[in-house]
Image (cartoon, rainbow, N blue to C red):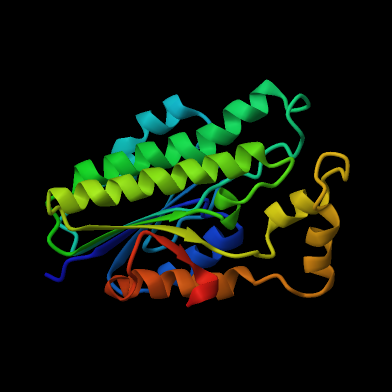
Length: 243
């Protein structure tokens, strides 16, 4: 019997995650587990799990459902879910927003990556993690202290996970991928920000007006190219605009 490939995708209901889900379910002999806060309809090879990644206790309780015990020939974790958070200067950010953005953008992917390595260490085929990061991780953007710092943390923990895998010859391939600027609900939130809390507002409004945003489907195809050709990419930090 031919062994299945497994893809675990967070933020699977819309945007880049929705586009990735639509491509992945078309792959033969593949199981796709989609995690999202919003409900998604199950399909033949798609198993939806409705989980709020901001609720750390809920996420931990669902670990056995997220990572099934089967003899897969390839396992891939795509930590795509992310939140821009409350766009505001320090002194004007709510405490709950600070807690939530780091829960979604840092704590959840850290828990999932740790569980993925633990569960599938013995798999002989490809073992790939793609953490969807951002160019904001290395930029100073006023109003984005939570988003930028959380993506910087995501980059760092991905690089350390790769080093640990290399030191023990575990065979995992880890990527922190900047997806570029995509026409998603997150961009709508950015364009709705206050000029007083985000000096770059007009620049981001122009991206939409000038048609400079990539479509989720365009970026999804590049993410899949990375997953299907991991040996072609040297280093953990990658940017879709460079391939």
